[in-house]
Image (cartoon, rainbow, N blue to C red; front, side):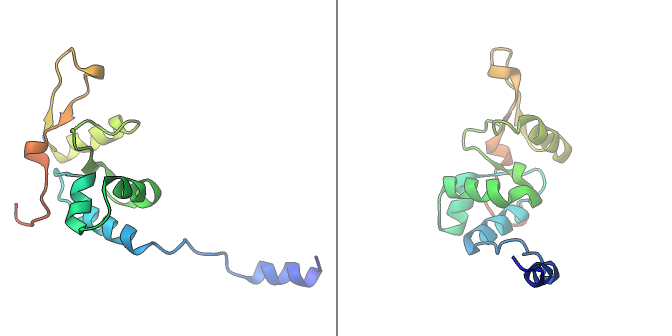
Length: 126
């Protein structure tokens, strides 16, 4: 490689972050709107958008979700996300998200989300 090519490459700007796919942008916008102390399931987000499904929403969160309140998107069974239980639980306590305590016989004794009280339907003012 020539010295001229090396110098030209140094002058070039490094590539910026990849452009966010439209679907991912819409998913992240919905997640940003979920009020403090409320949650939506992965399927709720897809249904709200009218496209994709729970797995596609999960994929968007795994790739691009670090900058949004990811803990507000939850499993339909109310169990905390595997591998993120403690971080999510801290956020739920900070935000006052309704939880259901498990009895001593529950696996790991971690609470579940009280979806009947915590679930947000996408309407503002509730």
